[in-house]
Amino acid sequence: MNKREFLKELRRELKNIPFEEQENAVSYYEEYLDEAGIEREVETISNLGSPKAIAAQIKTDYAVKTPTKTPQEGVRKIWIVILAILASPVAIPLAVGLAACISGILIAIASVVFAFGIAFVALVGGGLFSMVTSFTLLPDNFLTFLFFLGGGIATVGIGILFGYLTYFVARQLTGASTWILGKILNRIKRREAV
Image (tube, rainbow, N blue to C red; front, side, top):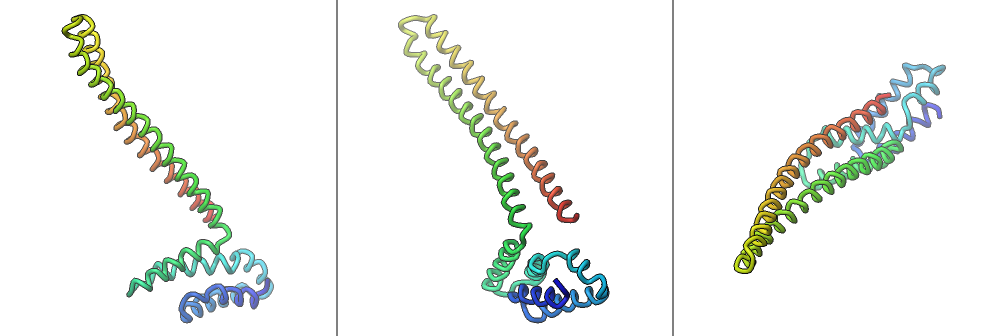
């Protein structure tokens, strides 16, 4: 791809932003390629990347930096950013992979917390039921009454322990997931920088 083809494709990809922004971007890259010289033109263009990826970044930057005046303009900018992300050949696999990682982590956390929560409810509920029904056994057999009452109290105690454990596990998993997601995002940023 030569300079003329590169700039033509870049201009075509930038058609969704205002003309002045298009001209600024195209003139910047035109000057950049002029400075590189004819002998290094092909090498410089290959180092820049595809015009589609460059245009996606320019569109995203434009949408983020300019203030919105109307809701319609805000919706238009959101669509520009979405289209810019989808236009980038690298962004789609990264976005899909990141979404899969995030949803997998969140599902795992929710599953563990849910399981501990169910154990808490089952133990406390079962213990309370055992305690209440033990009183129906009091007239028939005092030792059976004490057995069911003690078992119910122990079960409620274990249930309360599971409640505390649920709270503790939820806090720890939330912190760990934040740390993991931060590491993933930092790794993606490092790969994009290279």
